[in-house]
Length: 305
Image 1 (cartoon, rainbow, N blue to C red):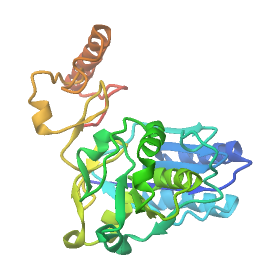
Image 2: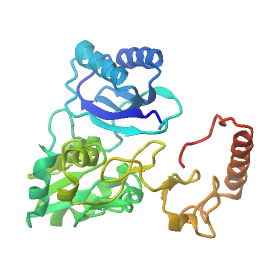
Image 3: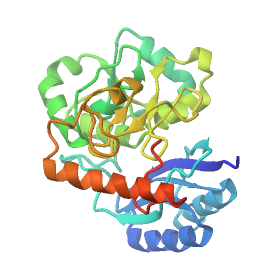
């Protein structure tokens, strides 16, 4: 079976022509039949894309040569199925929504290479913080890491303000999926008066790629924002599927729940989604199944296992 290549990367940089950049990427992406989402902002870019490695590198080189973006860390992986349905370019005012007076283009935490990460987080003077959403943390994390119990990134500010006195006494090491959240979070912490702030370069994906499995301190799987849902410690597709209703990753036990209805609801959203939503999702699922029976793929169908 032919596999497709997936790459995720970001770059923080001042982009006055971020809309022109996005349009250039859009033209090239459609020409090369690349899939995924590309986000272009005045603060930089963030993306996960799929296609042939040759075509993906052509796109990366356009960013490097035409816009002077360094793009140091490219997180590569492979999949036996198409992880995205379409290609789209999105324009935003900021790369991630976190309130504050900080400027991530001016000051951020110290970036730590994956091969040096274990020593840092094994130090008793280091507090390790997972800055991802709670549902991501629940399927995999580094040993002894703090789960801030946030449902979206905007809540990270509340976590810091509540725990600031205790956090400031330690070295702070943070990690996320691909590294971009830590760039923003570390800039926010420094603006709040934190002194020793570190972040995992390239995030968990870069760590799993660069550190031998037997040396890894990662436990479980890593949630990814595409049709694979999660990857294991070898960056192969994981064992989770995703609820269409609330987008949470679901284990086999979750799928055995009486509250799990394929394409409609799961144990996490059964009691909070409206009956109107459930009816709409059920109709959608029926259309998907009818399309599959005829040998077609429904336009709204997900490849989430």
